[in-house]
Image (cartoon, rainbow, N blue to C red; front, side, top):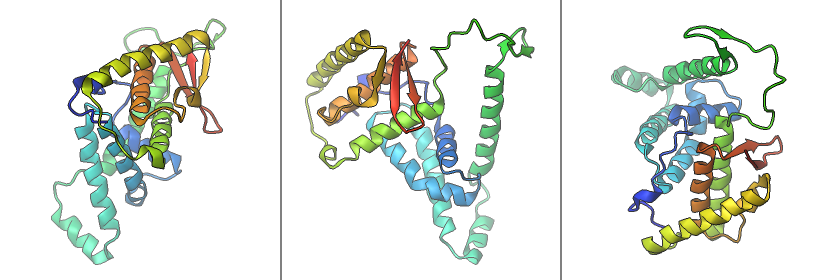
Length: 241
């Protein structure tokens, strides 16, 4: 399905924190430290994600491509003999300092997570809430890792042989199909409070409907109509708020 010519498919959702967030997630998944070797190890996986986001007509894909190019350069350099690496480093005065950027981003994420766990009392004053009895235990903030796990599940599904051929269909049919599929998904959540990944993205769907379903699910998450959670057993579950 060619989505590049249709603005209605442009993914503008801010639940994606950006390219550094994706990179940090991949490194954490492999229990790696932030260093050149780690970046080289996750390069291909990162490139796979970028290709998938391109297919979704993701609005900020350019930011991801910049990081992808730097990762490719780092991986290529990791394959060179030590003397050639030294020579290349001497000649690259303006290279993107990806390692330091990633380390700073990690600090920011940790600080942000800490502040979000407190109640804001004043402009610069935070205090932990000693009494959690009034908090709604059924609603939680969607974690970035859960979003990327959802993307991973979609990527794995679309990598199956039967989905590799991308059909070309009429744009008018795509828009109609989008409305129909959205109604179907909303009906599922009206009937049940908890939905499994396979109930939404079952293998009877066409490739284009899987992509449509993914975009609709992201919209519902952003609108705080549903939540997504990645379970310990790698299962994805959706919850109606």
